[in-house]
Length: 97
Image 1 (cartoon, one colour):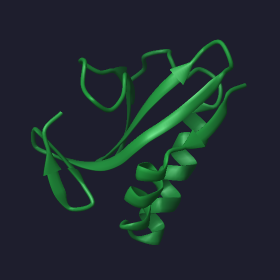
Image 2 (image 1 turned 120 degrees about the horizontal axis):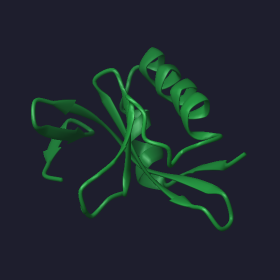
Image 3 (image 1 turned 90 degrees about the vertical axis):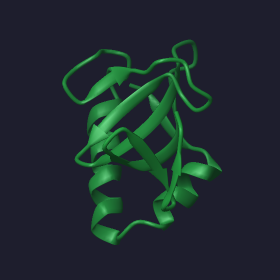
Image 4 (image 1 turned 30 degrees about the horizontal axis):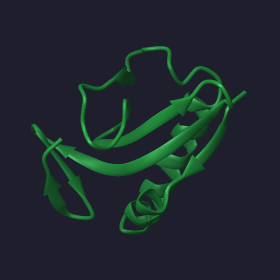
């Protein structure tokens, strides 16, 4: 089992979302990342190199970007944003990834 930790930017990203969206994302993180965070499945994949994270979890229109430290079994949630078309939006602002 992995420990899940949230960075300060990820917590701030979550605060900008509606309560039901926050709950949906937090539930998905617990269900999807606690046991096999580095196994690619339909909603979870390795990302191309970018400044945020190595992995992406898809939760509806939202994306959870995270890194995994296999040695100490920690999943670190880096950012939480919305995917619109080809763009990522964090706290309502588009950022290129």
